[in-house]
Each structure stands twice: as C-alpha cells, then as structure tokens.
Image 1 (tube, rainbow, N blue to C red):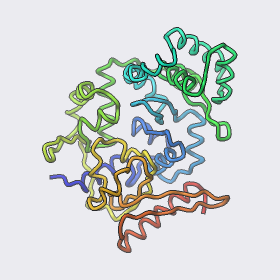
Image 2 (cartoon, one colour):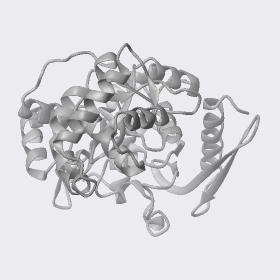
Image 3 (cartoon, rainbow, N blue to C red):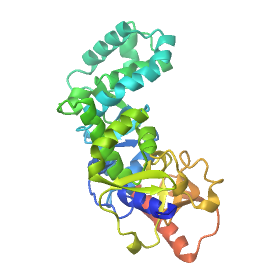
Image 4 (cartoon, rainbow, N blue to C red):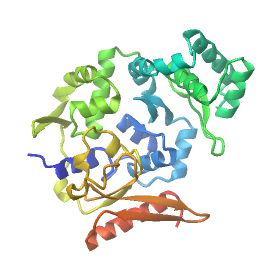
Length: 352
C-alpha cells in the first residue's frame, strides 16, 4: 500500500520539483497545464523550481515574449498558461466561471450589453499589438463612458479574459499590462467538451498524480461529474492505487523513489504541490499537521518530500535574507539540504 510519504515523493517527482527535466520555463508550464499565479514573484519561483538552472530574468523574458501567458483561468484565479493551451481551457472553464461571477456582475449592473461595449473598446484600444497598463485601461474606459471603479474594472477585465479578448502582456517596469489574445496566442483547433475534459484530466494526473477524482475537480473548478467524464476517457493511459478506500490515479510509469537522496525545497505560497489537491495531509510531516494547517497560503519548507516549516524573504539592495521557521529539529543531513535550498533561491534571484 502506498504510504503518505511515498505518495508525496511521487508527486514531487511528477511535478518536476525533484530532478527537473526541462530547461525552458515555457516547457514547465506546458507540462503543468496551468500554474496558479496570483502571487507573481512566488509563481515565477514555482516555475524555476521545476526548471533546470533558470534565472528569474529568463522567466520574466519568457513572459514578456508571450511564451508564457497569465490570465484568470480556473476556479477563477490567476494562472500561468501556455499560449497553445489557453483557448481550449478557457472554452471549457469560462461558462462555469461566468456563472460564479453572475451575482457580482448583477450587483454592479454589468449586463451583456455593457460587456459587449467594454470588449469592443478593449479591442480598439489594444489593436496593433499595443500593450496597456491597468491605469491606462481605466482611462480608456472612462473616455468611452464606461464606469470603472476598482472592482467593476476588475470584473470588466476578467470577462474580457474569459471571452478570449485579452490576456497578459509584458510588464512595464513593475506594472502589468494587457494585450489582445489574438496577438499573443495562436488560433488552435476547437475541441469538443469531452475532448477538452479528457485532455485536462490527462495533463493533471500526469503532472500531479497520485491524485483522486475529487482532487482534480477541486483544482480545475469543474463539477465532479464533468471531472469524472474526463478521467473516464483517460483511465487506460494511467494507473491507479486504492489507499484507505480512495482511488488515486497517476502516470503509468512510476518514479524510482529508492534512489532519491535527502533534498529540501523552499516552495512559494500557492505552489501546485499544495494547491493541486483537496486533501493535503500527505504533503505534511504527520507530527506537524497542526502547524502546517495554512500550507497553501504560506511559503513552505519541504524536506524529504514533507512540509516541515515555513519561510519568508526580505529583499535588500544587493542581497536577500531568508528567514526559516522550522516546526521541529532536523538532522545534519537535512540541515545541509535546507542550506542548499536557500542557496538555490538566492542564485535564482542573482543575489548572494
């Protein structure tokens, strides 16, 4: 029977955190299908953890060049996504997100007519490969007579994302921009709903298995019924194990976990290692379940594939301080692994 630690080890491997196989940041995002990214700095580090020797500047450049896009995609929240995958996933998930947003849209009197007008205004303002900041788009809306207080403005932009009108552009300094999706992503074949469900399910279980159907539904924001339709179509390409009455699905090639040496990782908040599962107990050293109850929201220290503490950073002019909050003692080998993880993070930032 697969124990919790073994399950976490398989997840670390399939998520490309242990022994990353990719050199290009965009290949990591493609493998992961979608990566939660509302904490922008942390999400870039999440990509780096899964990439062989890549800098923050290289990831930023991939985003600027449109090799990685950022948009509201699942549940809904910000995600990094491949330009090749953004359209079919939006086509699958947008109807459910629109339903979730319906009450808020009604509260702010955002009707289909208003959204049609705002989308048309965005198309005109961003035409010709333009990329505009949020402040610039507020001015665009105001000039068009569209009220855009902060929350209303956010809803207008999210609807345009879900309607495949806009997505992220490159940053201007520290300011985020928006661009037309047609300028940043290729036109891709339209999938039927069943095809899209199957493709999303296979991508999820290959990159995050072992996981359950409910894990997949929770991560994707799909109903359990729709998630089950997707899983049913790809079961033949996966393997499964029943643990304590729950069926876990995973890639059909299992990782050789016996050869893994003690390693440590500094995971950002909202990392897919935590966020991708409804039940997260397998990720946490059993003696620290109480301390790690906020494992999704806190940057986590992982040793031997289990969460054993939290960490935070303080950026200085030419350096970064990393503050560790360990839940309990480590042995010398584990301490050295944590030191290596801190060094890896400093290297990523090009700071000593």
